[in-house]
Image (tube, rainbow, N blue to C red; front, side, top):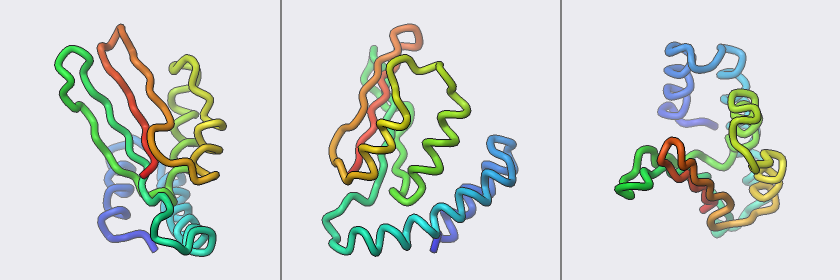
Length: 126
């Protein structure tokens, strides 16, 4: 079951107009289903639990974004993210990224540098 904090974050994204109410409901449902599936599929505590996204400035190395997302939200989030970014991220196959997460791959699964924006995006499963 999603925690109160996770539900509040989703509701705030709806209130801010970042996602639709339907997308918010889908995220909450995905969290509930994902946690149930994860509990059955990964009974051991050593299985990945977090999807970590880190965006740093190339010039200074300082973090711009450092967020941990429960692994149960990843599939819904990737599908929604793919809709928003479209073809903006060259060389990133969202289906391949999703497959890496679903198979239990851990560690860094993606690193992309955007020279125009001066940013590095890294995605980890921990």
